[in-house]
Amino acid sequence: MTSTTRQTDRPAGQISVIEGVTRQYDYWLTVLKRTWRGGVVSSFVTPLLYVVAMGVLLGGFIEAEPDKLEGATSYLAFVVPGLVAAHAMTLAVGETTYPVMGAIKWHKTFFAQLATPLAVRDLVNAFLAFVIFRVASACAVFMLVLTPFGVFETWWGPILAWLSQILVGTAFASLVFAYSVRLKSEEGFGVLFRLGVLPLTLFSGAFFPIGNLGPVLEWVARLTPLWHGVSLSRMFCLDTVDWSLVSIHVGVLVVLTAIGWRLAITGLDKRLEV
Amino acid sequence: MISARGLRKSFGDFEAVRGIDVEVRRGEAFGFLGPNGAGKSSTMRMIASVSPVTSGELRILGMDPATDGPAIRGRLGVCPQEDTLDNELNVFDNLYIYGRYFGIDKATCRERAQELLEFAQITEKVRSRVEDLSGGMKRRLTIARSLINRPDLLLLDEPTTGLDPQARHVLWDQLFRLKQAGVTLVITTHYMDEAEQLCDRLVVMDKGLIAAEGSPRELIDAHSTREVAELRFGVGENEALAERVADLGERVEVLPDRLLVYSDDGEHVVAQVHERGLHPVATLVRRSSLEDVFLRLTGRSLAE
Image (cartoon, rainbow over all chains, first blue to last red):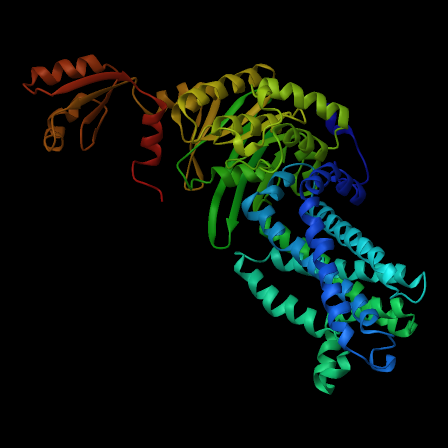
């Protein structure tokens, strides 16, 4: 057979990691074109309502010294970096729960894609790349909108804070993807939202300093991935950066991302082998 | 094109495929026949290089699916049993985007998508959403999609299940044209007429094993008689009368509503029945079909 003579070092026909993703670019572009309008509401309008309600209106009643607010001069300045980080998590979880199950169970997109030269690894990479793009764009717009509120101390802080928010989204996207591919029915998502996302949002230091939780619960909060993201985001926004703390936060989130990514690929591989 | 030796597939304790040997040659239309649960689809997924082989040897286009999966899949077309079209995309995008997965450049993808829409006779639906298509159109679109990479080998898993007779015939015509164009077809089906229409050669699978192999004609010759005489004696009498006609054919089968006498000369059987003073309510002499072979080999009872 003539066409089998193309020899490379890699097993025949294996495509590179980059190409595995770029071949799906057109697919994800059409997904984006179809869903961006709904995304505007959930990505930008909803969090803005939170900022106005919690930060401006509720925060107007809160008068505290900066040392009680981790260095923030107002409650608004305190709550904003945490809100955006929590929002990055919510978005990432939303994009890796029902859409992942849909691609396996309802639309069977993964099965169709896997009948081509694409591998499971490529499906996971492109899916997560899209989620990261969604998180990055939503957080970027969010941060830009917040600039006039005077909550950022430096010009470069918000950029690093934005990168931390992307890291939060990436970690949660890969972990929740790994969870979703192992679920047989969507009932497991209710558990995730009620016992995972909601408590994390409320108690990971986004709305109040975790010191208020008391010594035991404070340490529990420190173990949650969202706290690392909130703390990163806040340090950069308020210019209270402690670089040794930054390296711990980043390290934790990167390790969680790597674990999630690995489990996502192995889980999907097993799930699609029928 | 395909060569399997002692091919097996297990899911836990369950053995779906229990050691089969298959050889598919270039340009032929090859069929896997069998009742539900016979192991056809598991075999197809191994050939499609998406389901790892449990044991045995499998070579597709001369390559090993365990190591060269992407290269094999790049040259296969797969039309799965269940439509996996993207309902959220329109008809054109389903073809175009699928082509991009194969690394085909954008211009070529557009050109081929247009050609395939014509081939599938759905040009007027180019911008329609997949949801709005009829079952037959979806199937044709799925087949069109599987051709976007100009495959050497096209795998069709129960291509016409659930379609109305018109849609089935349109599809058969298209598959026939593909075969004429030199595409090797591998088809699973439990429709005997489909197998007789399309397949040059086929295997009958049952309980994970191959029960018989050959061309439709060879299988009929080997496993059935030339003709079948169907005798209807009326409810309740068939069984009792079976013994009195048993010697007239090679084999007699008793069904609730009729007796089937397998013989090379059906008319002669009917004449003898009358000579013996038996008067069936109705008689029918027909040629043996693949269905007779199939039921003989895999039994009449339900597998599930």
